[in-house]
Image (tube, rainbow, N blue to C red; front, side, top):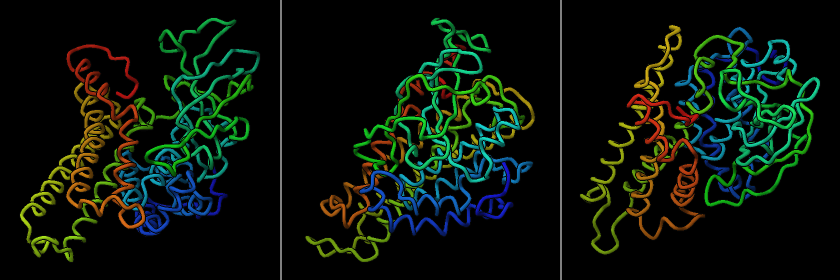
Amino acid sequence: MTGTGTLETHLTARDILDRARDLAPVLRERAADIEQARRLPADVVELLRAAGVFRMAVPTSWGGPGMTSAQQTEVVEVLATGDASAAWCAMIGTDSGIYAGYLDDAVARRLYPRLDMITAGWIHPQGRAERVPGGYLVSGEWRFGSGSTHCDRLAAGCAVHRDGEPEPGPDGAPVHWRVVLARPEQFELVDTWHTTGLAGSGSGDYRATDLFVPEEHTFSFAEPRRDGPLHAAPDATVRKMPGVPLGVARAAIDHVRALAETRVDRATGERWSANHDVQAAVGAAEMELAAARHAVYATLDRQWARLAEGARLTPDERAATALARYHAFRTARSIVNRLYDLVGGAAVYRRTSPLDRWLRDLTTMCQHAVAQHSIVRASGELLLGGTPANPFL
């Protein structure tokens, strides 16, 4: 990657966080437009690009900020206080720097010639890659292509086959899980994203039939080409995910606190700020969010420090990060659901209450695999000496 894009070559982690904070209120103003469009409008994409969020995982040796997982999560969290769909797409789009670390350096620089290129796609082996001379013929249909409507590169996870038979992975796994990278126009985008929440993320399906992808444009997570914490464990792409629910919950609490300054109960004439039920609800929400947030950042910092030392994560450390991530999603949804009930009938109006959109966004994002109960079960299996197959640990 080079610094030949529209931004200056060097942006620090602090620069990007400050730009995200400036951008959050703009995203809040555009939230209804984003939801109605069912994708990120082009100008919103460029606002995110100009903020530098898509370069967060690019290493300093390539002119990027080389941000830690916790620093990336904080930027996503700030963006989510403005709009969840925009934050979700930013969270996924920044995977360019991670994927580049699994490619030959010269190939990565050709695929990603600018610092602020966006990658999207579903990386788990939902498709099929048949070995042919020089590469693979890729076929399949992939779901949840968040950001596929505006990305520069589209990833697709595949199970490799040779002569029609499944091929074992380089790490000895029974299936060779390989991720292919191609231009989005090489796939057919399928407009399936008609959802309750995260409507603006453009997370539709995409498909291909016998698409030739050169070997050098593919990678296995079992074979990193770059050292460091972002490539020492397979969960790097999901570590920053809890920033989205944490940011939405933060926005919802701030919204209700602002309401309480002026709202009066119609039946009793009591000021909301003096109402014991309102006080307790706000206090509980702040307590629960602080605990969930601390768990996310503490486990991310611990994980990063251990991997930076070259250490192998213990089962307890692996489970702690996954469980904190799961808990952030579930806690955020619980907080917003209770605040929605607290506000009552006024919360149901989409045009006047952002609580309606926030609750729907959280309902949809909690359907992601990292927020499912299978994470809790797999973590327990790991802690009891097992080897869970769940890829999010």
